[in-house]
Length: 327
Image 1 (cartoon, helix red, strand yellow):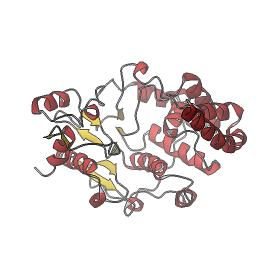
Image 2: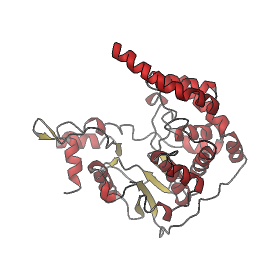
Image 3: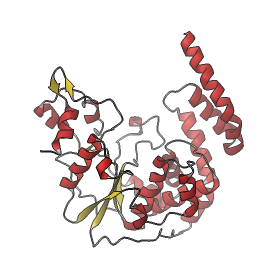
Image 4: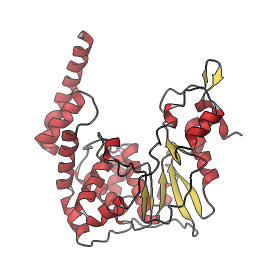
């Protein structure tokens, strides 16, 4: 109990330093919910999500109104020749040679699964500028640390897909043998749950995800998210919320009918995508592993957890996966 009180006091000391700046930047209501979330870490409440969504909706209203009235966004300068193939974008900033084992295994899996009419593009620090031109003020804020790599990548993923169309897939997505790319001709596709009850603590409501999506170039959703992120960072030097993209998409979903229709056309799919991550430290069993793969077209993993290669002297599911690329 004494340790808990000590930790709470430490968090309070940190929060008091940012609370009043937050009030100045976002208003009291948002600052209040951000403070409560920091002081008492727990899954996001509906009140928290609503407060931040309302703020973002108001903040982006000038942009939303433009899109409602038929505005066509400007493409962020197409630079790369795709040679008629559908691009599939995956990003590892440091380059392929510096990928952790799990990331490397997932990317190797992608290479094997990519159909002939598509091409995998690994986006890195060295090559991203060959694909799109990002505004200088964004690059400056990224350089000085106001925009983190995670949030710079948010801008990149929507700049790339808006400019070229195709697919964005995070580097920790593992494709199963049953995975098909038959959705690549659709205007928009993403992972979606049957009910918002599957994501009660997330602003996305289970209707979309940002680690796996695809669509046609000049897609209104991709253009809106890209421009909204630029709009945000031109005005602000700090995040509203870590997963800011979900709040941006929310503002488009509830503010622009065409965006809402685009998202709502996606049928529920891949609802078992977390199953494999729960088993990575289990002893590998071929039948059980294949049974899991049959549950979903792809699985979202993480390279940051403490994955083990052995349990009780036997190789784990994780060890099997990272060994696949060498088979």
